[in-house]
Image (tube, rainbow, N blue to C red; front, side, top):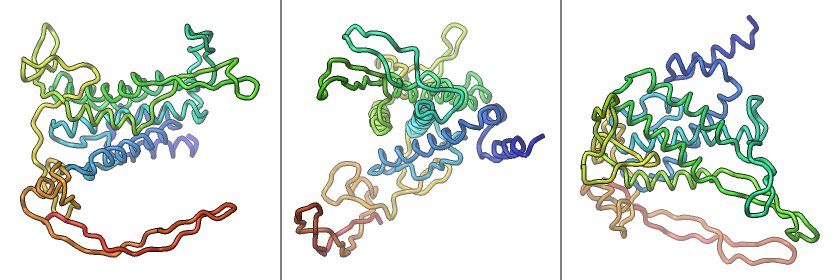
Length: 320
């Protein structure tokens, strides 16, 4: 056995949180694993961006174990983490395909010819089919080989798919004009993924409108249905959860809560980032500090901007 294959097996065996099926996929697709890791990290960064002003700010989620039991409760926070993680892997692998980093995939060449709108399909369309397929095989493997038919497995699988659809269903058409002096005598277009910031914002909206569900047997299959039968059934792009979220006011490792003591809050806001809600009624303390900023900037010909440094005192508020 070569040293390369030994190192490959060691890399896959040492990754934390993978089950046996995921380790097998890792060893068969080592060149893709860097994209998987990058996708996981991008997902957690986006999660922390979207929730930076919430009591739960995604700071307990570790990119190393993102494919394990990230949050042990079936809350809407867990739903979001699973969705954004699956989306992150799909997005990252697809991007690697399009940029020529992977031998197993490339651009999507199935989209070609003339469109009904008169432009020519050309260029490098993002191969979302490959990215989604790998995300489904790798990320979903944990649920498919754990508690088949269990409510939590059904929830995680549904939210994984919702995450992938948040990328696939919002692909956009990008075009380039060809002609004399930039005229559009000929226009070539390709399909491109949304930015991951757009994916994160869309999933955040789905988080706010997530459906509480329970498991029921319908015919021969177990399915998730809304707890409130007056609500319309959730779609494949909606997020679902099984239990209400805790308030995340106090530290509790079992639910992934760091609490809000010491968190920065906005004393003038009545929203969730305001000190009243963020601090859970415990109050807050105010600190003053000096900040240095660029100011009185002037443009000089040619071609630079010269600024002075200004100091000002600011107040910051922290939860007790």
